[in-house]
Image 1 (cartoon, rainbow, N blue to C red):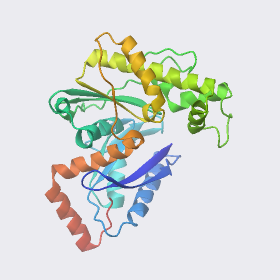
Image 2 (image 1 turned 90 degrees about the horizontal axis):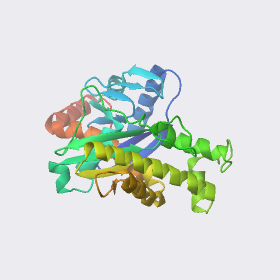
Image 3 (image 1 turned 60 degrees about the horizontal axis):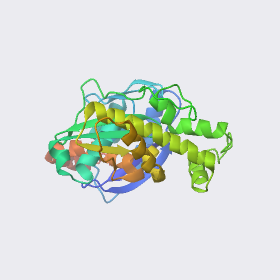
Length: 311
């Protein structure tokens, strides 16, 4: 697992990205390590003035307090926002990563009239799965946190899993199946998803079959969500879709075979494999756009008093 630190300008354009391994250990130690990494990263920027910090994270986010529950990391009520705010001396906004990516599509992606007046469904898949619903140009964020599609019932003998969507289509599920079939080694530098993708593109039947099965399961899951919510616009994102674009035709075929509401186009995210970067940028821009004058005043005060900020 990795954490990306992204710098964007006021138009949401990515200026720079670095990736660092997500720290292991206790949540307090991990947060302190991440805050230190962010502070060191910001010390490199001398000609730009940092204004706001945005955090897009998986798990259950309390946006009001900046606290996070993340079962995969073993975090419970982790004070992500407060720790970063204290370390960096900047206002911090924290949001669900899928909500953030859906927001990026609305704010920075391809503008469509239907997304500003109707509804849009965003479905994400990579190591985790999730969805976000936008209504009238705004991402719907329940006060109790986003819903989950991780436990949607699915079936795949080839990919295994527990009969639930996330454990069947995640990167880890594909890797486990590829190792079991000896498509890639059990461990070592070649035991990666990139190796599975290379094998598929090189004509390996087993690798192609795994990725095709993942596409089928994803297409059927997207169809189920579409049938329940019937949005005006349907967008998919995350590396499960974008790292293997050859599989999108299979996603669309499975979707068409499963849906009961008739044809509907599936649009792939405008940000490709950089969708996580766009999501993080939008979280910071959301706070900044809400009160730009106050943000500029705070930045000027920090500059006058010599306090280091974050970007």
